[in-house]
Image 1 (cartoon, one colour):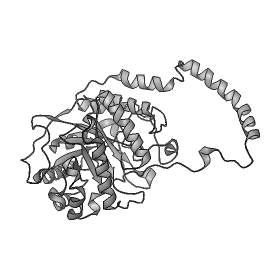
Image 2 (tube, one colour):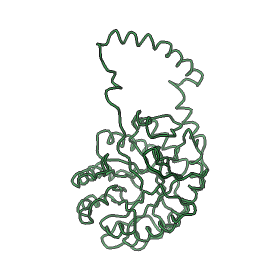
Image 3 (cartoon, helix red, strand yellow):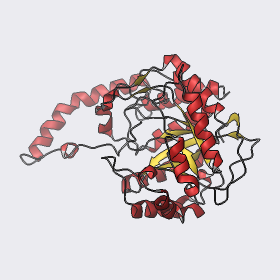
Image 4 (cartoon, helix red, strand yellow):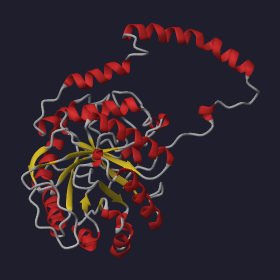
Length: 375
């Protein structure tokens, strides 16, 4: 299993009606990176200024998932917090990732996307049914064994009252740890023991010279007061301007990540939530990219006290560059042959196709599954 960071979790006694206890206070805490499975081929055509070194992949690609898991594990990451809700496409992608994680001895948690594309909350009946479905499929799966029960962070729980939330997750909490995504100590107090803790998705903070440390410490105290799990955010930087935002937090060649990590550690977390593995629209990714290479994965590994195996990332890139097992020069020759035959193929295709036929790829643009908007 991947390494866990040497942060000692110091949690008070469990509150009445609160969640089951986390790992021993003497144990180091898990490091979980937010992971997104909504990428389609056309996702890379908008709101992006950087791209993965592995290419503009589809989240249907099991081999891409395997390379991601191996790179993350080599850097000391314990597991991924996977953004998911119940749709046929995302169910299929999650199932593939579970198989990959099982084979690689890697762990997973879930961020349940309880908001639609317009940022409106899903009906409580839908949330309840989705959580029950997830528990039926995965509650007993060792892949989700980060704590004593699988962790599910409900993004959108703050749109409902504490009573509504408690009623919605009551059955699911028998088999899952259901966390909220509170953004303030007041929100944490409002929900009390209705949830099993909180995972703060805060990637737009500038931890260098700011008040990030004090805010995270206050959040931790509020969550632990109710016996909850506290997942503290860690981010390498932020740039949401491609999404219409105004804020940018410079990466400072790793210093922002180091400061964010330090602030999160001091908040006595039960886990660290790295934002993110592959959120390329908000530019919080640590996945090796065209713009930054493996720099931020290397910084993260250094912070986790891990000597990263560079061969893992290099082997992944080499495998990706090879075509049908050919060496790089062979791939170029083969690609040139394909290009030479392309005009002939198009000519024959047009002769066989009825007038006005639209190629399948143009019958409607693919779109991303909704992504969380940082606040």
